[in-house]
Length: 222
Image 1: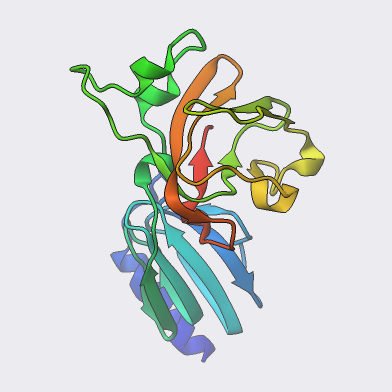
Image 2: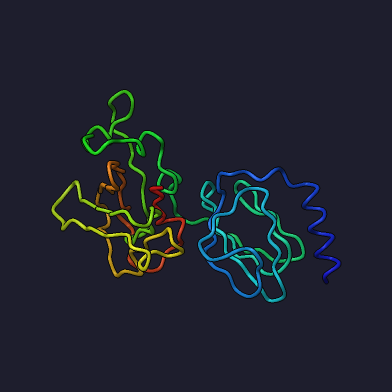
């Protein structure tokens, strides 16, 4: 088995492109022996992952919304899905919005003085669809030590203010509303305020509080 895995890794090393800095997927779950990979890590295209006997990993791709559960073997991370040798992979397409997983530069650079109406318009002033979350409990990527404020913009709702202290952060860089027992309203539009920046997003009308794939509720603010 080791020789087969070694051969598979060798083949991947020949075929794999140079590692890219932009992440392609996020690790949702790790079971068993998986060297160099941990829960909530980002992985880039070209990354090779070796899964030991009875080990498995779940990857959610940020661009394609593909969610993969891979058991054993060797994994080559791609741009939209993995290539797997000597193992098994189960794929499912899950609800997600790539604009929420990675907010656009225009949205990310909005100052605190910018109005919500401007943020909802495109370059020609026409209404623009907001990045959408498909779970009511966002998983927010933000810098530890800052303060996160969530404001409802289309109705009355208490403002949520969260000091992002190390002890409440998952993996040192994520704040999980589900873990904290907090949730937003299905169909609501919101501003996430982090320092001098504002990020507009909305929660899908059919979103629920039940466990949902990470990629469908991921909001990357940093």
